[in-house]
Image 1 (cartoon, rainbow, N blue to C red):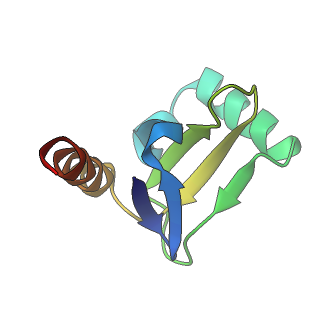
Image 2 (image 1 turned 180 degrees about the horizontal axis):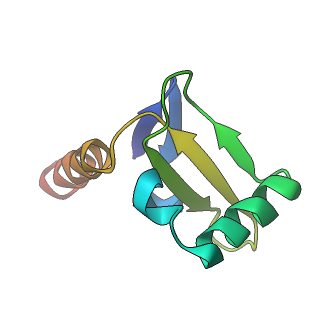
Length: 92
């Protein structure tokens, strides 16, 4: 199944590692270092033109490649969409 993360962008639900609130996540020095390293490697992509609210970490299964998406969707919204997708899969 696919998950809409904002900006017309979709990810495979199996590739999503986690959703992180951008405000709380960027308070940690370790997270700031991680974000800088990902940006330096070209592993970040903004999918919003509004104020960013969340970070979505995704990784292709079976590879060591990961990507960090910056989204205007709130973590709660992404979680709800993800749960709705899971419900469709398990009940369908």
